Length: 227
Image 1: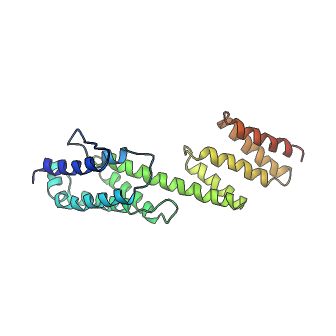
Image 2: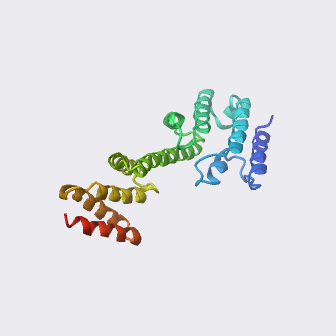
Image 3: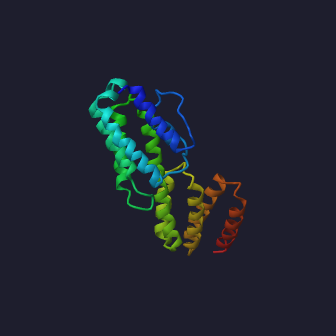
């Protein structure tokens, strides 16, 4: 079967599935439009996973020979990509076990190291971003769970590690604010109060426009000054 016909058939499947979107360039990779269509959604629906599995399953009938000729890929490269992508689509929701998420990241990073010039590199980077965001959300979820349970010592450790691990996270502001709350709750004496003052100053410096939260923290600040 002609390679262009194979690619066109796959593009039509995606076109019928979501917003009638048709890829304009048949030399584009199969998954590029799919991963970019909704970057804010870190998880696939069951229907999306089902469609991906079917497309991925059918990949094998041309990846061994036809795709090799089309893009210069060899079977070893395809197998590594297949393994990483399979681990990706089987990774669980952020609040469940993330063993497959870590496995997928490791496998896909191996692919980037081994085949840095592959035409699949951009798709793989997009996948890795989605996987890391899932781990990021999970780490915040764990820290926040301790916070809700009022296990402030554990929450403090997890929030500190979270900010260090994800310095540009969308959850950073929340993590630093809750760190202020935690240090206030744990300020039993002047020495402990210093932890709050430090957390407070850091939060105000980074988020000066958070007027409502800063106003609340100022009441804690004034209270601890009396210790």
